[in-house]
Amino acid sequence: MAGIHITDIESAINWWRERSPSPDGITACAEVRALAEVYALLVYYRESECDDASMPPQAKAAWLAWYAGTPDAPCIAICSTSQGDAVCKGCGRTEGEVQHWPAMSPAEKRAVWRRITMEGTAWRFNRYAERALQGKPVPAEPPAA
Image 1: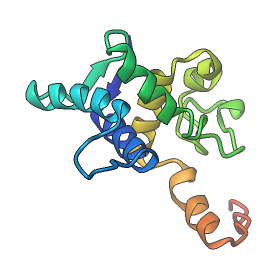
Image 2 (image 1 turned 30 degrees about the vertical axis):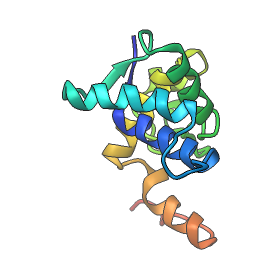
Image 3 (image 1 turned 180 degrees about the vertical axis):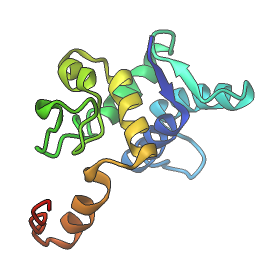
């Protein structure tokens, strides 16, 4: 089964803390408490991932609610796997990941997202990302000599 990385659990905790702030500065909402238990066990056992299949139901539901607000596919509509590349230059996914994306579980998708983000080599993380933030068009590549 796919593992949910501790950073995703932390992001979900922070999302829920923002969404349902503590009324008294001490008490956390049920979703934060459920996710915090999983987070604490990962820290205690020095693990970086929890198995999504064995995650307590309330924690998994809270994580899935956070996940629903994240971008689904890393695609930037420049798919080089359709041109024969084993790894897409646009998003960084392998050909198999691109093909099987619709059937992948949320945890499997997040594992791919984590990998491609950590690698940071896909165009989505460099030349296109900077221009998207600035709102500038991407210039055409010069023709190969």
